[in-house]
Length: 162
Image (cartoon, rainbow, N blue to C red; front, top):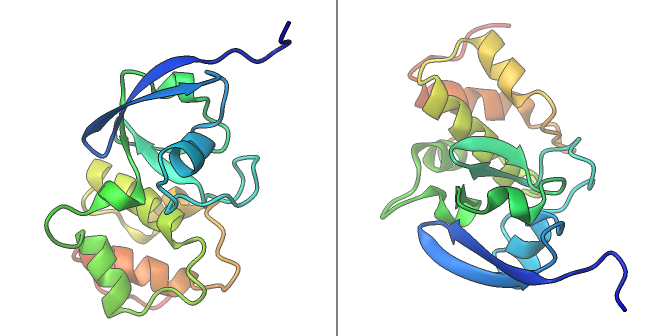
C-alpha cells in the first residue's frame, strides 16, 4: 500500500507540443519540466517561490513552477524559456545580449520569463511598473540595472537617471 503518492497520466501542452507524463499530480511543475521532459532552462532556486529562478508561463501568466503542482497546468499552455523564442530570438533575449545583462546567468531564465509576461500584458511599462513586476526575482550578481535597461529597451523607453 502506497501512502500519499499516486501516479496518473497528466496531459500537458508545453511550448506548443503535447506531452503525457505519468506523475503524481502534486509534483511541482518545475520537476516535471526538468526531470521528466528534460527542459532544464527553468531553474531550481529556492523551492519556496521567493527567488523567481523557476518562473515560466502558464496561459501567459508568470508563475513560480517550484510551488505549482503539475495538476494545475493540465489543460493550460505552458511556455518555458526554451519556448520563448520562435524562429528568432525574443526581443528581450536580444536586448539581454545587446546590453550584456547576465553575469553568472543562473537567474536569467526566470528574469526573462517574468519580463516577457510583463511586456505581453503592458507593452510600455514605466519604471515603477517594471520594478513592481520584477520585484521578487533575485539576481545574486546584482545585474538589476541592466535587467531594467533591457526591459526599457524592448518597451521603447530610454534609460533615465534614477
